[in-house]
Image (cartoon, rainbow, N blue to C red; front, side, top):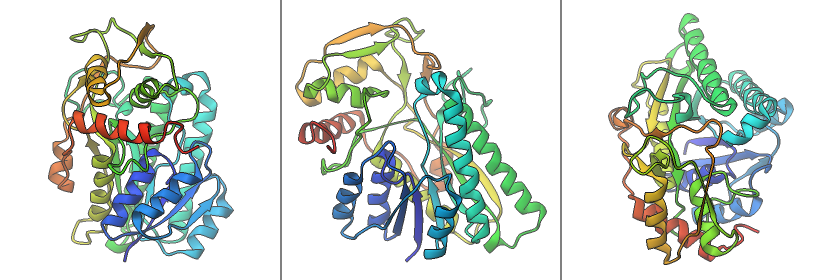
Length: 349
C-alpha cells in the first residue's frame, strides 16, 4: 500500500482528499499546524476512512519536525496543501504570505530531497493566470498574479520547474528523478455527501459558498457581494466552481500519475482542474436558495483588491493526462454545502 504525506491535511481540501485517498486504497499521514483548521475534522475523516490517520502537529517551516516525520515513515509521494490562501488578506499583509508559503515549501522540498521522496502534487491555483486576457484558460496562457497570494503560487511553481530541470541536468535515474504535478484549481465548493466534513473557515468567510451557507443557517445576517459592475452578463464575478470531491479525486489521479513508472522522468507539469464553465455570483445565489429553501439577503459592496471579472478553465489536459473530469454539477455543490452547514451550524466547534 503506497503511503502519502499530506501537508495541511486538516484543511478543507485536505480532509476531502484524505477520504478519497482512503477510498482508493492509499495510506496517509498528515502534517498540519491547525492555524486554519481543527483537529475534529481529522477525527471525522478517520471515521469516514475506517482507519486512524497519523497526524504530526507542526509548522511546516520547522525543519526538525519534517526530518522526524520523514524518518518515521517512508513516503511514496507528498501532496502539499499547507499555506495561507486568502487573496484579500494577502494584499493587506503580504510579508506573512511570502514567509509562510515560500519558506514552508522550501523546507518541505529539502526534506523530500534528503529522504529520497521526489513525487509531489502541489496545490497551485488559477490565480497564477492573473487577469485573464482570454477564456477558457489553458495551461499555456501567460502567467502573472494580481495578489501576493497568487505570486506565492507562481513563485513555488517556478521552484518546482527548477527542481525538475536540475534533476534532468544531473541525469537522475527515473526512480530517483523529480516528478511533479502542479494542480491549478479554480474555485472548490461543496462538501462530502455524508455531511460530516466541509468548509469551516475562521472568522467571516472569504469565499462565496461558506458565506452563503452561514447566512442561510443564521450565523451571518446577509451576504456581501463584492462588485456588481464587472463586464459580465449580470455584473457579478464569474468563476469556475468545482465540487471539492471532484477536486479530491483529481489529487488521487495525480498521485497515480506520479507513481506510474512507465512515464518519462523528470517532469513538472501544470494541470488545470476545473469544470470548464463559469458561474456568476448571482447564479450561485439562486442555485443555493433553491437547494436550501432559504432566502439570502444581499448587500452589494465595492470590488475587492486582487479579484478579476471572470475566470474559468480549459480542463482538457487533466482529462488527457490524468484521466480526470469533473462529474458533479452546481445543484450537487449547493445541496452538499447545505447538508454540511445545516447539520453543523457552528462548523466543527
